[in-house]
Image (cartoon, rainbow, N blue to C red):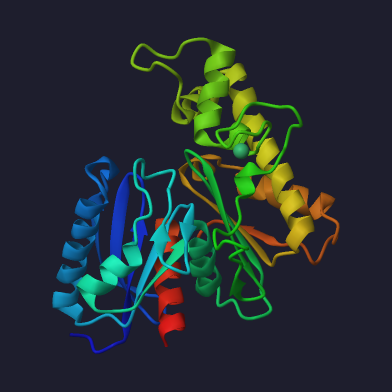
Length: 310
Ligand SMILES: [Zn+2]
C-alpha cells in the first residue's frame, strides 16, 4: 500500500478499456487493460471494470473517487451513458451508480474529449488563466476544451464536438447528418473513403482503403494518395485557425493515431495559426502533441473525480 491518495480512472473505449490508479498529482500508479467487446452488453463490461479495479485495489487500497471517461451522448449529472455511439446497443446505463455500489467510492462521468483536455492541461502545469483545446484524430475526430482552468461541459455536459464544424459548405455527408464536417474530410475513416473513391478499389486484402494505406502510398510517392492526405491536413489546419480565433487558447493539443502519422501536421498548424489567426504573432497558441500520449482521458477523468470528491 502506497498510502498516497489516488483515484480510479476508467477510459471506456469502443475497442479497449483502460482502468488505472492515478495519484492526485496526475501520475499513473498502475493500470489494467482489456478488450471492451461492447456487444457482450454493459453488465459484463462493468463486471470487467470491477475486476480490473479490484486488482488495483489489492495493491493500493481504497480509491478516493472514480472518474469515468467515455464518448457520448452521456449525462454527467446522473453519471449515465445515454446512447454512446461507440458502444452499440447500450441505452441509459447508470455506470456511475453501478461502480459506486461495487467499489464504494463516489463516481463521476465525463466526456472523454473533455477528460483528455483536463489531463493535458494538468500535464502542462496549467492554471486558472490557461485555456487548452484538445483534438484527437483517429477513426473520428473528438475534442475537449478547458477554458481558463475549468472544463467546458456545455449545456448537457457533453462538451464540444469540434469534428462536426463545417469546413466545406454543401460538402461530403457526415455520420452526424450534416454535410461538409471536418470529420467527413480529415478523420481516418474519411481519408480512407475519399482515397478509395479517388483511386478505385484498394489492395486485394481490403474492400476499401484505410487511412494507413493512404499514408503508406503517399510516403511511397503516389501523387493521388498524397493529394488526399494533404487535403486532410489542410482542412484540419484551417479548422485549427478557426478554433484559435474562437477561444484564443494557450495550447492546441492534437493527438490520435491519424494525427500522429501526419508527420508535419503540428508545424504546419503552428505556421498557419501564426500567420492567419486574428490575435497575430506573439499571442498565438502553442501547437503540441499530447504529453500523456493515449492516457490523457484516463488521467483527466481521475483528476476531475478527485477534485469533485475532495
Ligand atoms: Zn458531422
